Amino acid sequence: MAWNDRATKERRKQFREEHEALQSVCWLCRQPIDYAAAPQSVNAFEPDHVLPRSTHPELEDDPENWRPSHASCNRSRKDGAPPPDLGSCSEQW
Image (cartoon, rainbow, N blue to C red; front, side):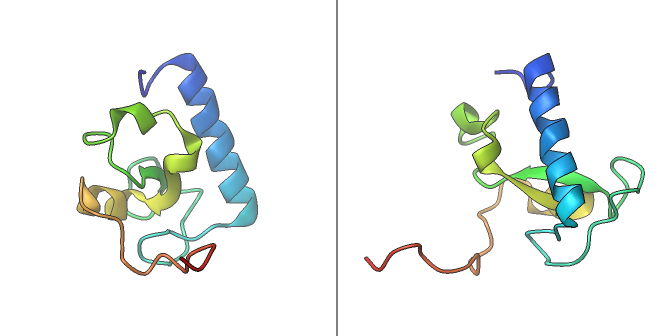
């Protein structure tokens, strides 16, 4: 799947619109995202892949694998592991 194909661009647009309406914060640093900032500027919105595209290419186009982030946070994390404090389990195992 191509990150820049028409269907994916539409899903990315919808993902951004949903999170902008909610004023979602960056899932990495928990700080507000500047949804009006120019693309790729430090505090601008950028979808981040929870499981990196490099290691999980099959999830590249899956919105369930995307989280709202700052462009700078996303780029700093690169292909690193997700933050350890992402909440609690949905069930007791």
